[in-house]
Image (cartoon, rainbow, N blue to C red; front, top):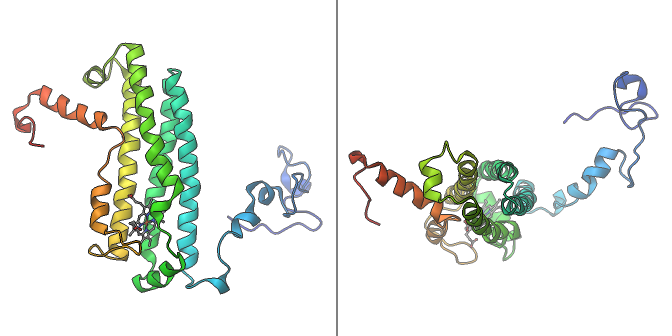
Length: 262
Ligand code: HEM
């Protein structure tokens, strides 16, 4: 974002520069607060920027990146949790397209969060070990946002099942006839996206851990990175994955070789 030069006597764009069709009529802030512009007051810029350690208190300059990566993740997870709650209400009311749109937002945020994990790979390993000590006994596994998603995302399954019951259609029928049950199929796929991209967040986070601290080690909490490889295999909606096996087997194509041993 550019740092616009303030006009003399004004906080930003003046009436003269705003143009005839601009909704900007006067330039002083109108929202309550002390910050110089309404942007900073509404977005709470001073408060947000005060949430990182001051430079002189940092164990290493990269601590800014480390703190911001975690803080922004918590804020995005807050959006995910709100959107999951809203999607649930829509499913319960058979508002399938609205539920789908809400889940599309969830998935977009999770993708963004997943990609942002890799920013931490720009820290030299040795510098991370200095920063890590500043976190005390803390661990990302204590993230309220992440743990909230682990609890709330699976809760979409029962409303989805109830919706199928109301519509008199089974999961196998939805997947066997996606062009007949278009909306139900869209919603099932949106739930699958949520399950898949959240899993990929965990995969990307694990890959980043291996790069930053190594695979054959324990965290400061004594947790083994090997154990995390097992933890991340859980699924929110196992039924949405199982139906694909049944569909493949039902297709009866010999090259798939039938069902594989479990
Ligand atoms: C250099 C960066 C990072 C390293 C080396 C790291 C390392 C680790 C390790 C070793 C664990 C295993 C549990 C434990 O700590 O005992 C863990 C778990 C976790 N961390 Fe991180 N982490 C990093 C960044 C982040 C960030 C930015 C977040 C964002 C909130 C985060 C969230 C989590 C979560 C949610 C778990 C539980 C993961 C799961 O069950 O899949 N971590 N992390």
